[in-house]
Image (tube, rainbow, N blue to C red; front, side, top):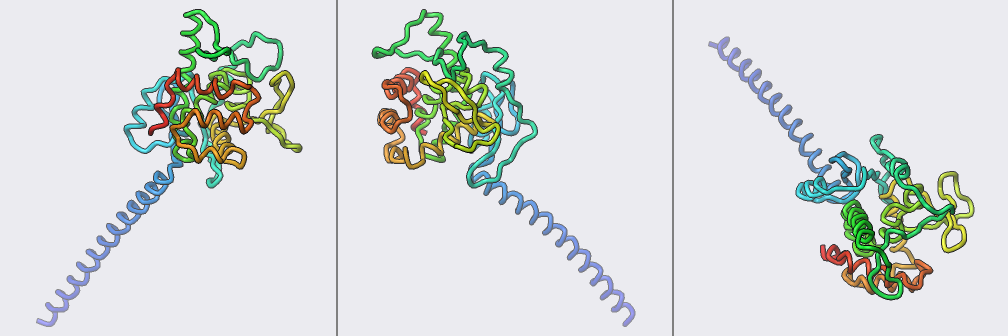
Length: 294
């Protein structure tokens, strides 16, 4: 009898150890999965994990903040001029360089021929204005070609501009209008060779190689910043507008694109006397104000 009891106790112990081992393995598996889900949730909450949208599809590495799968599907369906690669870079994050990044501007520069013989940073040749003494004159066909390029540029950078508005409070319409104007819809020498879409100048007296390069601007030569990607140019623009010189504009409503345009001109963003009017005309003719209501 005693021997049978010992055998029963032994089997109970073996069974208990087996079940305990099963529970331990189950708990470890669930804990790891839970930790990964929580970590991913925190990254998505910070809105610094993004994806890349290119000309023929979807590939990891771009930088418009995406909150839902629906937004990703919409972006995948959007046509763009060429593959747009952006890398993660922020003041509060380490720089993550993706090996899949390609320099699309080298390909684009082969397709664009500049007619002037000067090292002109921007010719503004793709701009269309419909009001005032700065209204452009072009044939219906020319207008259609320019407007198509403008719309393609908007589709290419819309979600980037919206992401910057959400993070920094700068109206999407202002970012897109300045990008259109300052980069000549992405076809200026400055935007193609330097990835500089906002005419960002360099004022450093001790530049390292590759930090900036020289272009003609307003009849004289200036040094302009070089960026690894177009997205870095957009982020640099946001950081500048939230700096001391322009931060007072953040007090304006995001929907007040007229106030922002006039404020940028008054603060000295550009020397063009019609700069504010041109931004306003672009915003209204292209209906960019609709993106400020997000």
